[in-house]
Length: 257
Image 1: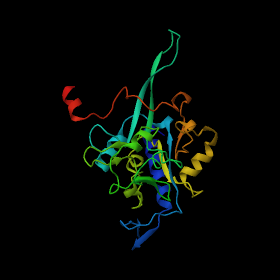
Image 2: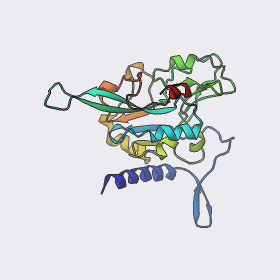
Image 3: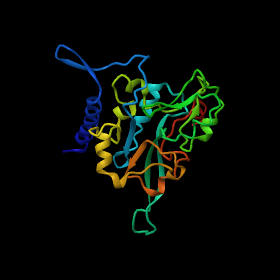
Image 4: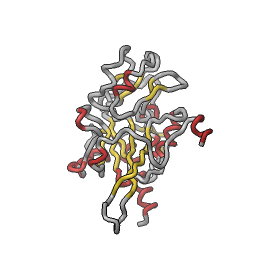
């Protein structure tokens, strides 16, 4: 089986696994995901998380571009991105001495999110289903949460003047869809699902690779709900820094290029 077909199979498998746990309504012989309305309650029976297999990530930035379009993220900012780093591989002059390493990044939706207690108005909070969100009606753009996040995953939106971050595409999840970054991942590197469901793909993959599971900045004790497989130990703390190959740029920077 060639690589393209295998990657496509992985994405389709993730989509089917996710939709299996979503209630459906029937219209004749056609089954469609239940579409949530704005009044859909926070469902404590589910606990959402993401698993990223770094070995499958090719650094194409399809996830980044999809997120920007899906969530109207302003130029120069990101809710998710794949940072690329130049790494030293060997001191032996007869071998390849340098290479690149890619690290998909987003809000970690921590069980102990440091962004929550610093918010003076209670705008940032963790839902019962595990997703950390920002109530834009209450947010005063003080940026305390931006400074408190150890993963550099928040920013003050220059258009809305509110704190902004990844929400696991909550609007899509409540409609029975996968987050945009998962849906469009070329290599099938991102798996999203319900940790409360032992039959979900994410639970099965995490069980299969239990000894390999890692999180970013484990010493912070934030208990992230974004897990990694194939993460180089040298990069568990590598959060800051510009991408060496590509990064979003604002209009001013683009004009100078």
